[in-house]
Image (cartoon, rainbow over all chains, first blue to last red; front, side, top):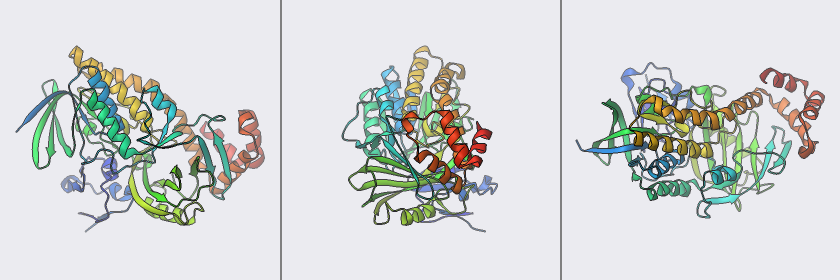
Length: 56
Length: 395
């Protein structure tokens, strides 16, 4: 599961690199389709403010 | 469920979308443009540099309401502070000319589209897209209401996070090595050496990218940088904090705004069209791979997209084959120039801090208005043979 920190700015860069198009960017929300996520972590890596955190 | 029918649906109201909507409407098509945000143009994800010539070419009349500053000089800064100064008379510079007020500019571009007859819906999110007969049906959500929009042609102008193209089977996801992570402050109290210069800082201040200071008049400037996540473990924001602390121009400056976002710098996407759909702007990789600038190309590609879409509607042919005219126009007028910028970027990113310092020193002592390639190479041989070898490998 991914935790979205409160400092996320919803810029959508995570969605831009998600190879499976699993992230829906709203004006002030991110919706992850975790079910189909293969855990490549690209979304976590590219975030300009490191707002995505992997939770075990 | 409520159903809206239109000839052309544009998704995303940035410069690319608004330009596409404007020209599709001008060409006689029924156009609807939606944007997920409550305010078009805000928050900005942009350093706001745009070429004067590019706007003129597209017939966009400059307005003092959205031009923050006019400038024509460029200052390139190496890691040790050695700088090279260029101006428009000596070198043709992309993205130099105006610094925009994007929050105003984007709204004006959208209003221009509306003046041509396009309808606009804000705070409207495209959730899904499916094919139905010879049209596309987009499920949209606005303020708690879900409805469908049936369009003959969908133009995906939904930014670097683009999903619209992907819904229809186009590959628009960027690889992390082609996606800059960018962070920027708009600051007051910036102490600029030349308030008429765009400043670019290279080297380890921004691994995989560069840092910039774009003056917006008085002591105001956009101060930002882009990095590649593949080249650093720190976030773009952390790099920006360090840059601002260490750069002489920003030591005493205060931030009044923080912007972040992705910038696709891998060049133009290979496929921009499929049946009933085309992508434009950041969603299509219409970004100069060297500078990361994309406003001019977004506006230009939007023009082609709008014109081709309108013509296709008139002819009643929305096939991939018909829409490929747009792909060709983009390749000819935008994609080709990107190839050389990609090579230049590759070279720039291959240099170490020391090599960048050496190259800057070589340039510093020459008059740039009378330099030719031969002299340039002679100079590089003298100051940095290693940098020259890398140049030879790439070109």
